[in-house]
Amino acid sequence: MLTQAPKGTKDVLPEDSYRWQYVESRMRRAAAQAGYREVRTPVFEHTELFQRGVGDTTDIVQKEMYTFTDKGDRSITLRPEGTAGVVRAFLESGLYAGALPQKMYYLSAPVFRYEAPQSGRLREHHQFGMECFGAQEATVDAELILLAYSLFKNLGVSNLTVHINSIGCPKCRPKYHAELKNFLGERVGGMCETCKGRFERNPMRMLDCKEKRCQELVKDAPATIDMLCEECAAHFEQLKTCLDLSGIPYQVDTRVVRGLDYYTKTVFELITATKDGNLTVCGGGRYDNLVEELGGPAMPAAGFGMGIERVLMLLESEGIEIPKPEQYDVFVTYMGQGKLPAFQLVQALRNAGIRADMDHCTRSLKAQFKFANKTGARLCVTLGDDEVASGKATIKDMRLHQEQEAALADMPEAVKTMLKNESEE
Ligand code: ATP
Ligand code: MG
Image 1 (cartoon, protein in one colour):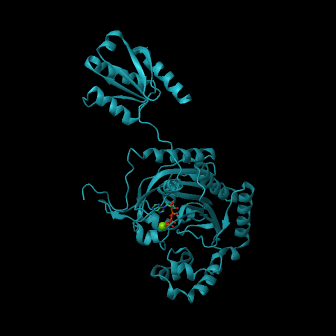
Image 2 (cartoon, rainbow, N blue to C red):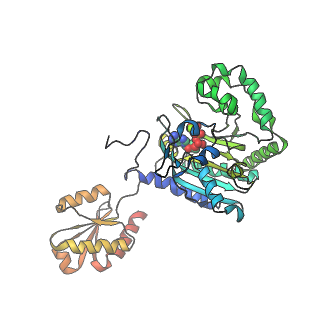
């Protein structure tokens, strides 16, 4: 028990964290290019925020939240998605009164859902998400889809399709709901328990069920896009025109309705095919009523959430290599009187921006070299009694098998030159 992480959680070990950092740096860059700035919100919020924000009829709120009562008798919930907390922060800080649109992103935010753990489904996962407040134009919806799509393209992913849909607004939805319930009425008996529960409260979510038999039964359900009001229809046309202009491949998929209650108009998913079926790596859309629903002014908004673990899974399944950085540039080995001069040299190298280290485990010189090799250090400098006395030492290039002598005081410059030469090889 003690040495076993809770079910559905995963460690990111030092051996692998570079993979996270690589995709994170791509995400930061993509966000910054479009004017999105980072927001960080607490891992836990008042439970009510998610009940109101995510929606009482969703799986998340009904079954998946990590909720507890704290010592002050408040009901607290670990973040089960990123948007509600960002909206809360937006409102609490009065950002709606500032320049709009307000564009924000969150990166590797931990998200908690009590789900049955399986491939691609964790109880703690991490999301990169982007949110844009205060803009109603479909150019924003298109921008978000393009940002997410280009991110994957630039990482080298090819197995990915963009699915878009429009689920209308409170104006067009009642008519659609009536028609949908009419259609589902004859079929609901054969569907799963969850879908039966959704029939009265949120029939549209039945289109999103992952059970095979339910998917089969809703195959010919009426489509929201056939019943959009004028405003929603024009918005959807504009979105498609923007996507056409940018030349990205996409398909209109009337089955995409998203699992959260807050969406209006545009919804989209980036889907990859795996051997176990389709996996959504990114989902988002427009949520024009959420800010008001949570007590703020009327404020259009749109965003997406992307699961980092699923992005990494996708890269791995496509065999996309992420360059693995070496741990050190230089390893300083020592003998005799060399220990403290080695310590000083390591500090001087680090101060010059070079990744350097020395033995801290009282190893033999041979073992020090072996360790240096394991860490992938490109250069080695050995300090013994002679080097300490002469104030000079030899830098060995472990890969090119070249050597160069330099004064200890000039070591950082000499090391930099050698590193530069090697990277040009
Ligand atoms: P799914 O349909 O796979 O359950 P979802 O609709 O619940 O996904 P969202 O709430 O839209 O997912 O979350 C955004 C993204 O977060 C998903 O597209 C996915 O990449 C990731 N994600 C969601 N749930 C999990 C999970 N349990 N484990 C790992 N990643 C997840
Ligand atoms: Mg889910």
